[in-house]
Structure formats: C-alpha cells, structure tokens
Image (cartoon, rainbow, N blue to C red; front, side, top):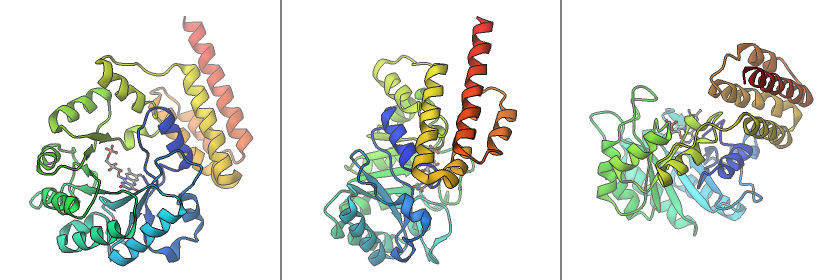
Length: 313
Ligand SMILES: Cc1cc2nc3c(=O)[nH]c(=O)nc-3n(C[C@H](O)[C@H](O)[C@H](O)COP(=O)(O)O)c2cc1C
C-alpha cells in the first residue's frame, strides 16, 4: 500500500504474523526511480524473504524491464498492480484501468513473466464497473500467462473505495482457475476473515486498511482460524513497546526530518485504533518536529494510561 507498507511497517506486520507483506507500488518508469520517494520504495535486501515488490504501469516493455531490474536488485516476487483506481500512471492507463483492455493485460503479463525467473503475481479488482466484472476472464489470462497467484479486491474500478466489497466474484474466480487466489477488501476482523474464507474457499487473505495502526490483526486472524477462539486485544505494555519500536524504526529508516513527518500518520492510526479519546495527544504529537520529542511525548502518554489503569483497578 502506497504510503503505508514501507520497510519498517512490513517488518512489523511480518513479526506479528503476516505471511507476506508487499512493498508500496513503484512506477515501471525507471526514469523516475532516482526520486527520494522511489529510493525508500526500492528492494531492501536486508528484508526477510520473501521480498515482494509491486510495479505499476501500462506499457508491457517498461513493466518487463522494471521487473527484471527488481529481480537483479534482490526482489523475490514481482506483483503487478491492476487494482489501483487512479486514472493514469505516467500518462498511460495503468492500475485497474488496464482491466478494460484484456489484450493489453495478456501482453503485459506475458512480457513480465518472461522477463524474470522469480514468481510474478497479479492484483486486480473484480472488473471495471458493475456491468463489466471481467475478473474471471482476466484470471484465466493470468493463469495462462504464468502468473503464480492472483489477489482480487472485491470492488470494481468504478466503485473506487465506496460501498462494500463483495466476495461472490472472488468465489467464482477461485472455481475458474487453479493458481492460488487471495481475497481482499473490507476484511477487518478475525471473524470476517473466517467468513470470507468459508464463502470463497480462497487460498489466502489480504489485509489492507485494517492493519493501519493495528498490525496485531495478523496474529489475531491466525489464532482465530487455528483455534476458533478470539485472541483479544494486545495488552497496554505490548502496544507501548510496539509503537515505540516502530517510531524508532521510522526515524532510522527515513532520517529525522521525514521520519518525524511519516510517524505522525502511523501514530495517528495507532491512537485511532486504541478507541480512546486522544484528540489532544494527536494534536500535540503533530506539532513536534524532533524524534526525541515524539518519543518523550509517547512515553508520557503511556505512563498516564498505565496510571489511569492502575487507579481504575
Ligand atoms: C492508502 C492506500 C494505499 C494503497 N496503495 C496500494 C498499492 O500501492 N497497491 C495496491 O495494490 N493496492 C493499494 N491499495 C489498495 C489496498 O491494497 C486494498 O486493495 C484496498 O484497500 C482494499 O482492501 P482493505 O479493505 O483491506 O483495505 C491502497 C489502499 C489505500 C487505502
């Protein structure tokens, strides 16, 4: 997820039970790879295997070239983005806009799979609008083109992020092809994960927004699927440790200036996910400009929560 699944967050999600964490989408246009943003999104060989990079673009040759360069740089899985609702990437139809052009989809998938020796996976939506849910056709093309796994977000391109994801189309695709299918969209609890799994019979589930500020979701789902029991929310002490460690990782990865700014959104998500009134601390946190100030404020915040908990006990 662009702006979310950077290296520090991927490491954290993996540590808390995610089987795979795909990097933020990068453009297939290698001319843009020297930008500061792309440097952070490139393959980091120190990352635990399997290292999955996602590429986006609308030109088969460019995508194939980008995939090959990423393989050389240490990527172990190439994921192709045909799910993003943005109109264009680099002035060409890209992301889910490609779903309209099945011939081009085939051309891209064949070009990319033949340019690398590592597995290539594909992420799509159910179609481009409610009358054109061509995910089953695209899925067959993907299978024939050598794609090794397919993720489907249960919305059409026209839906953007509106309404609810539906899983019937995903179930249908699962029946139609034999490569692994991964369901995605609005899976926001362990119980929902089980429902989607039962309904679609897919091979895997992908979690997006629910993991923002809540990386514990992965182990919660894992535990529920294995035992049928809910694990319960993490203890305050663990929340504190995870958040403070994440904060340090962000400062180290991005450097002080950018790290402080990127930390603001993650901390905002964590605080939001804790479901307590935290407007004041969020405002205060967002005004801080130095890493140690962010650490100090969070230390004080968790101390006050701990104190309140002890007093209530
Ligand atoms: C901020 C944001 C960034 C995203 N970036 C990407 C991306 O780079 N690549 C991608 O395939 N999907 C991206 N997505 C879509 C998610 O991967 C996912 O398909 C979608 O959010 C639905 O799943 P969810 O309900 O679990 O979040 C993004 C979504 C959001 C909200």
